[in-house]
Length: 248
Image (cartoon, rainbow, N blue to C red; front, side, top):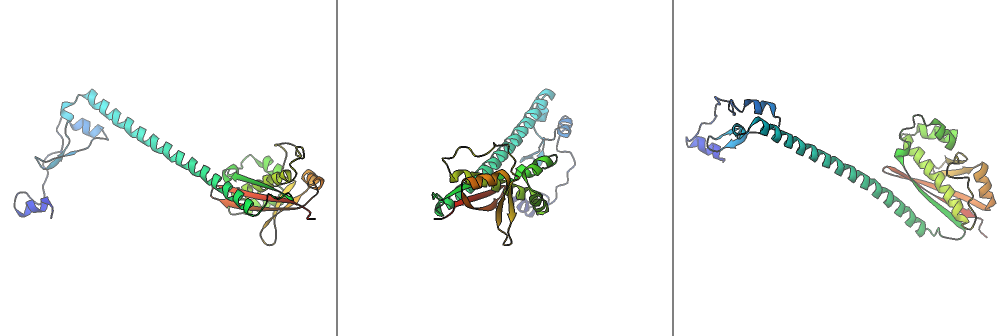
């Protein structure tokens, strides 16, 4: 039983206290109305809520106090936004790092460090392909008509494009790492990736079709087999590719 109910039962106070005046004085009225941060305080003597302290403050002091309150609120909001952004960035970085670690560990477990093969791993943020407005030339330069048709019809086109882009990059790394003593085989970072096509087999697994210059490099190194896999984890797409020589 709380003190109010006890007071009513003992007759020390009425059950419902009807107010006959505002909780602020005439001198406080403007400050209370114009200050959205003004708060009433409980007065134990009169057993009611009142706005206190404003009578003794000058208009300038009230303005200063209101400005300080607003500044504190703005700082708190800015700190919260910065903390949220930092957490998001850390989460994204951790996700990418964890994904790469898992892929590299899987490669080690599978014994892909063998001299008879090369391996490539790549991770691409899905956000890279979220907004494709005005980037049609870039898409056509790096993806075949079949790849574009597949990605645009997928439930999440950006994730599909990111997965295929990561696979193409992984294929280049796999072919390059298969013969580490060879000089740089590629035409540079700006070369189109359209001639490395990633398509889906009847089983649903991705596969690679080379043409043009990438196919020439593949044959020059006497490679015999190329396989690729694509994974998605949150905001990232990851791919690993294996380029193999003919087993003797």
